[in-house]
Length: 104
Image 1: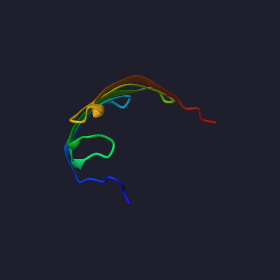
Image 2: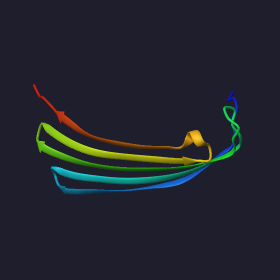
Image 3: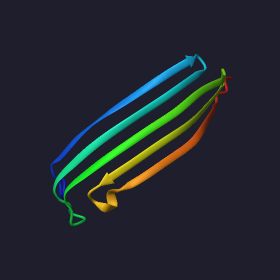
């Protein structure tokens, strides 16, 4: 049983590319786009026939500095636009992963 379940149609696509410059250095870039249509009204708000569009982009660089140390700076970006005002958002995440492996 799903309360307020409405028909939903989703379409979209994604693309990505990976470049391996050498065994220690890799760059990944990806992008996706999704378009969702929800038919009917929503239980939580007075919105009918909601339409959402979501975009996501990711970039990360992986560097194997040593056999036991990997450094990975990354960038993630997402944006959603919706006919439902509370469904709009934009998000950016930037960070660095540092992984050290110890072997006994």
